[in-house]
Length: 139
Image 1 (cartoon, helix red, strand yellow):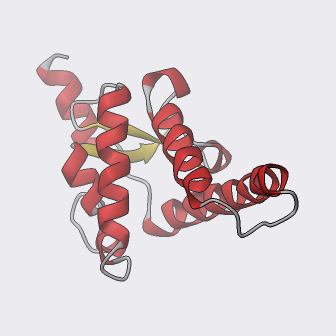
Image 2 (cartoon, rainbow, N blue to C red):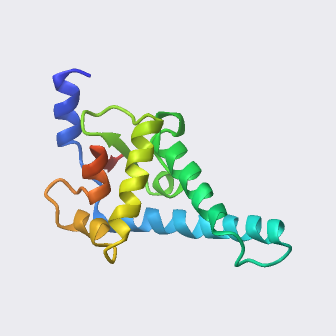
């Protein structure tokens, strides 16, 4: 990317905390429904089935949709017209998306402090954005 692209990404309108939160909520609820269905099928009706199903589903969902292949937007992000980009304005690859997912898990561990951080950060970045070098911008 050129220096102009980096400047554009840094100055592009960032998504607000409320919009980001609602998009994540939409994604989590949708994933929970799908996980429940899959776990029920795999365990014969026991929806408290294998936890690895949820982790694998979450990793696959977020890594794909945050990447260039998924357009940088999960379904919740598409509904609210926001997307994730690298700080230079380019799209994430699968490795960058996976790093952001790991950062998301780390951000959730201390009572979601890493996610709440985005509400007070000058660039609107949560810990997972800082770890992966990303912004969430208006699409």
